[in-house]
Image (tube, rainbow, N blue to C red; front, side):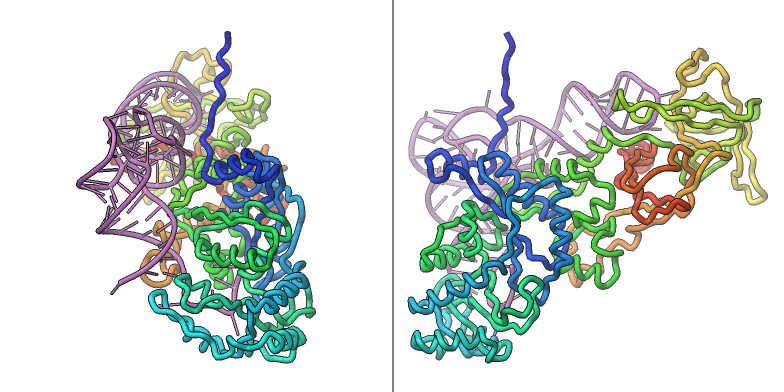
Length: 557
RNA sequence: UGACCCAUGGUGUAAUGGUAGCACUACAGAUUUUGGUUCUGUCUGUUAAGGUUCGAAUCCUUAUGGGUCAACCA
C-alpha cells in the first residue's frame, strides 16, 4: 500500500508552450539552438540559456544545435569559438550539429536577391548619418530614402557589385522596403547587408558584404528548422521583423520566444564590460577566478553540477530580476560538501607546544569526508609542536568563545583534547607561543576521558607541514548593480577582491594534489588546486567559504 | 510625449477563476570531534484603485512603478 507520490514540478512558460505544441500535433519533436556570437567568453548568463535550450530537448523529443552567430567579422575570433565549445562541454551538454551563420552566406545572398526581385529590398547609397537622420524617432515617423524607388534591375546590379567588392565600406547598404512610418522602429526599412572589407575567421576573404543580425538569425533558424528560437527580452521588438522576413522569403517558419536574462548582483554580465576588465587588466584574463565567466567559475572551483543546479533554481520567466549571488554560493557549497576531501590547513600560524607529550610523533587517522561513508581515511602525523590558527586563541576571550584561551580546553580535530597552561610573548607583548598539556585518554576514536569540550580546532604538525600559496577572492564589485550607478562601472570595482597568502601550512597528505582537485579545508572553506601550481609550489583558489555562524556572532557584537 | 514587455515576502520562482506554495536568505532551537553538515520551527508577500463574479494573484479598466525601442552590434 505505498503511496506513489510523483513530485509534480510546475512548468515554466516555455515548457507550457512546447507541451501545447506537442499535444496539438504542431510538432512531433522540437529543435532548439544555442546561438552565441564568438566575440567573447561565455558567462553565467549564457549558462542559463544553455541549460534552458539543451534542457528542453532533454525533457522533450528533439535536439539542440550549437550555432555561431558570426556575421560581424571585426569582433569575432576562433579563440572564442574554441572556448565556447569547451565551456558547453564542461557544463555537460552535447549539441547535435555545429553550425555557423557564415555557413549560410550563399543562401542568405540568394534570399536577398529574392527580396529584391519581389520589390521588397533596395540598395541605399545614403551614409549611416543620413540613414539615422531619416529614421525618425519613436514618436515621429521617418522619411523615405531618395534611393527607395530604385528599379529592381538597378538594385540587382548594384547589390552584385557590392558583393564583388566594387564599393568601399559604408558607401552602400541593402535595406528591406517596409514602412518608414512604422510604429516599430525596427520595421523602418532595416539594413539587411553592409559592406565590410574584413577577413572572416570562417569564410576568409570570400565575402566583403555581411548580413546583419536580423537578416541572419531568423534565416539560420529557418534553415536548421529550429522550432523554438529562444532569446532574451531585448529581442521582443525584433520578432515582428523576424516573422516578416520569414513570411516574405517563404521559408520554414521558426518562431521566436523571449525570456528575461538573469542578472546577478555584485558582478556584471555583459561581454563588452567583461572584455574591458580583461583588456584593462583589472582581472587576470577571461578565466580569472573572480570573473563570472564559465571559465572563471571553473577555475574558481565551481562544479558543472552546481551551475546547472543554480540555473534550475532561478528558473525562467519574463520579468526583470536580480538574483542574489548567495544562491550560486549555496549551490556550490551543497555540491562540494558532498564530494570534497577534508584537509587541515593553517593560514595564520600560532605555535602550540604540548609540554607533556613525550613521544616523538604518532600517526593519527581522519575521515576524508564525513558525508561519504566510502570516503576512507587518511593519515596525519601528530607531534609535540603544532600550528593552530592565530584567531583560534585569545588571551582574554569574549563570552561564547569556544576556542583556546588560558585555562581552557579544546579538542584538536582527530587528535587529543588539550588545555592551555601558559602564554609566551615577545618583548612587544605579542603572543608567540602557547604551551599546553594534552589528555592522553582523549585520543580521537578511543576517548575514555569523559571530558566534553565545545570547540574543535584544525591544526598541523610543525615538523611535517608542507607549505602552499592560497588565493582568496571576494566579490568583484562593491555595489550590487555596478551598471546602475553614476559614472563608469569600473569605479565600483572592489579593490580587495584578491588576497594572496603566499605561505600557509598544510597537512602532508596534500603533497600529491593535482590541478582540479577539490578540498574542504576544515573550518575554512572549499578550495581547488589552481593550474598555476608546480611541484615546488602548490597554489589553491578559494571557491567559497563555509557558512560561518561565529563570524556572524562576532559581527553582532 | 508613442509603441511594446513586465509587476507575488529581502531574493528567485509557483498557484492557469476555488486553501497564496517551494527554494535561498534571516531568526530561533536540537544534533555535531568542522561555530560546517543534518533536523525542527518562526518571520515576511499578491503595486494601487475601481469593476466582473458566489468566489480574483489570476479576467476587464485606469493609475503607478520598472524595462525595451531611434548601432552599417548581436
